[in-house]
Figure 1 (cartoon, rainbow, N blue to C red):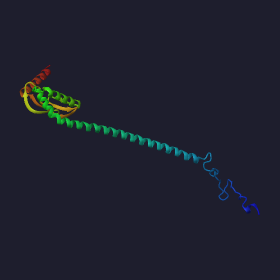
Figure 2: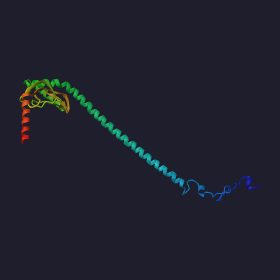
Figure 3: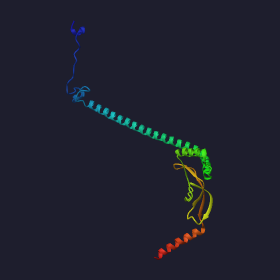
Figure 4: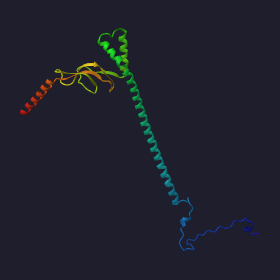
Length: 213
């Protein structure tokens, strides 16, 4: 029995290395027979380049996502802090508004000389406490009248003023920082019509004298 019959020898492998295809008569592409991944194979280099490019794009995308999340968190933290401060100021303002009548009574007692003894110490402690919370008073006789911070309860004319002026403070105003809790209640005096006419005439005379010169 021959070796081929008993299977002890493999069948020979025939490789067609002819450069001309016998059927078509065209030249064969020898590079196409090279196995994939062999050195110098352009297919391997082409496949590696897109892989590197996609990794770079992915890194840039993840970096942009992290930067966006960081910016959103920073804005959220600032908004929460701003809201916390606003809520605190609102709560303090509400409490101080309820104490304004008490402060008015203390002020009237002081004006009448009745703020003595233990009552004086208590009132001083209360005024110090509300002052630490940011409460301040405003309004003085002789201040120019400002409708945004003054409430006019009385109105009159006077030759002693040249513009609307607070001639009497009926109740002081209170505010926290720039927030008005209660406008100052005042008596307002305006220049009399005669005074306004004289000032207008004086201004016209000065302008006429300047023109003559």
